[in-house]
Structure formats: structure tokens, C-alpha cells
Image 1 (cartoon, one colour):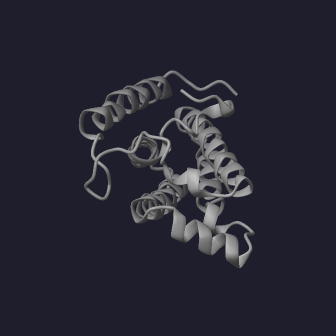
Image 2: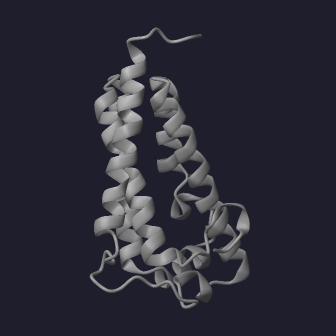
Length: 172
């Protein structure tokens, strides 16, 4: 169904906010969550994991990338129900919430840095807040939470990705 003209300014303003808001990450996002320098080397946390867990982490990062794209489309289309569904998917799909063996879960918790876990917890919190905003049909808050989620993703990639989690399996 086609949207009426009054919604277009909201969509355009939302897109503008996302573009300008996410640029703040690049201005201030070169510090690690734990205060250190970004780890862009081959010693990124994923390198200490068995190949099965590396693939699982990669698959989850690719899935989150796709969900973020779908969230953007849903927010710009004012499809609050879809926003709720995709935000829930971000929360429920967390790597440590997936069906892992106890030993794999322990290995991930031990191998991945505390800063990674902190960013992941914050992403869960923001996804819940986004769900609440979508349920209340509060588009400005949806846009704000999406921008914050994007910031979390970017921070995590700057600090821990090291180019290993690019979409489609291609390293930078």
C-alpha cells in the first residue's frame, strides 16, 4: 500500500538522522569499550575459537547485518509490527542464547572479551527498547534506538571485528 505524502518527510528526516547520527561513531568511535585501542589485527577474539564456533559467530554477525537492513526498511516504511519482529529477532538471536553445548558456551564466554559481552548486552537492551517504541508506534524513538543499535554494531566491528565479519565472507 502506498503511503500518503505526510509520511515522506518523516521517512526522509529519519534517513537523514541515521546518516548524520551514525557519522558520530566515526568521529568518536575509535576507542575500545574497555578503553584500549581497536584490535584490527589477526589476534581478534575470533582467531582463538575452533572453526565450528568461528562459523557460528560469523553466521550470527551476518544475520544481524541482515536484520539491521530489514529494520531500516521497516522504520522508513512506518511498519511498526515489522520493527517489533526484527527487534525481537536481534534479542532472541544472541549467540549465547542459541543452542550451544555447555562447553561451547563456556569457551565463547571465556574467549570473547568482556567489552564484547558489554556491547552485546547493550544491544539486547536497545533492541528491547526499540520493540517497546514500535509497540507504541513512536517513530522518533524507533529512529533514535536504531541509530544507537547501529552505533553498537559499528563499535563492535571497530573494536573486535578486525575485518573478519564482513557480509558474504569477504575480508576487507
